[in-house]
Every structure is written in structure tokens, then in C-alpha cells.
Image (tube, rainbow, N blue to C red):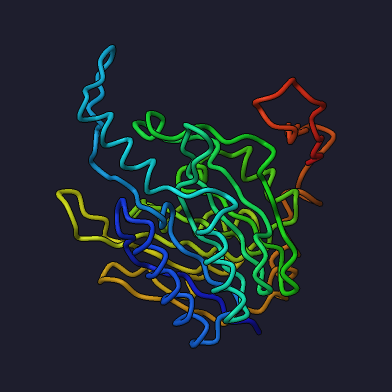
Length: 297
């Protein structure tokens, strides 16, 4: 049995220093509860600016909106950089895996990114959100197929799919084909339908789903949480919680994944590769086209 945790908490918007300090404290708290893996929400460092329009209209941007974007850019983090070093030290100090949503800057562009830290403190991988939703496209760049990691933790294979990426069927199929077992879903979606989606994914992929949502009452558009942990047969092991900031934990048995795949393995005996084939371009979208990786099933 392995104890895992999801953090439901709000970041300190536009303040990476305070967001990092809060993350360090929450990592320590999760470790104190016995967790070997802790998952944080989307954009935990340095925030999800829910309700902001950045002064943008079709064909027009305001000086005030540009200054707000500058503030967001200045509070974002370099990957790797001093902020990732701090998070790695926190993971190392407490000997656990950490998956955390951050706002990453790369030159003049921001990305909504999930970072993976190993218990030894190494930045093991990152995933940039492929498809920002709605107004998110104004402030975040698009990720590509070069950051779709699934990592072996020693107690299960972990990966991350961010917020509404979870509604991309082909992305889910790609993650299943990579053998994901600990399916992390950092988000800010606080609707009741989100829990339904998470249960569906657990059943579809026969994996443990760990969804961490922010909780914040600041500003005019609060985020009310809804974090949860789900088993490979769709049983809710913890959550959903809408009552405030919290850390949800659950004891999971990785062997249950095999039990689930007894009658449904969507990239194995249930796949029909004679009919369907998925091709994933893992070479990246910002360079010349490269040969796609073929995922049968």
C-alpha cells in the first residue's frame, strides 16, 4: 500500500515567493501525513488570474492590460531556475515525489506547466499544457508533444494532464499507451461535473486519478475546490472537498490496476489496433516536423 496526497489550496496570485513558501509548507505537511506522492493544483506558482481580461478586445489591447501581463510575467518562474531548486530541495528534504502546477516563462512567453520532482530533489520532467482554454490562449503559449512524460516512481508510473486537457480524447489515449498508473490532474475547474470526469478517466484508463484543484475566496471570482482521488474502478477514495483548503490522502494498492484491466485495457486487449491507430508527434511543434511516434491501440 502507498499513501498519496492531493493539495487543495490557493496560491498567492502574482507572488512567486509567497506561493513557493506556501508550497514548501504544504509539502512538509503532506510528508508528515505519510504521503510518497503529493499533487498540487494547476498554476500554483504564481497563480491563476481567474476573471482577468488583460485589457484585450479583438483588435485592441490597453496599456493597463500590458502592465498586468508584465506583472504576471515577472511573477512567473524559469525552468530550471531558483524556484525549481527550492521545490527540489523541499522534495528531497521530505523524500517524496512532487507534482506541481507553475507558470513557466520562456523568453517572452508564459506556459501553464506541471513539474515533476523526484524524492532525491531532481527536476525529473515537465509537461506544458497543450491547449489553453478560451481566454487562457491570450496569456499562455501552447505546449507540444515533447513534454508528455510518464515516469516510473517505483510504486507506479506517474504523469500529468492539466485541467481541460482531460477533455482531449487523443491525449488521454496517448497517456494510457505510455502506461500511466498515477494519473495526475491539476486543475482550477471547480464544477460538480469535474468529479464525474475524473471518475470516467479512472474507469477508462484503469488508473488511479489524483486531481488537485485550487481553493481561493480572493477577488470577485472565487475557486471552490473539488479535489479528489479515485481508484481504477471509479471508486472515490477521498473528496471531493468544497469546504476550504485541505490535503486529501488515500492509501492505494497499485495491484488494483491489474484487477481493473482484467476486463478493460483500452491500449491492450480492448484496443482493436487492426481498426485504430494513434500517432503522437513527440518531436515538438516549434521545429521542423519530425517522424511521429506510433501508438497502436
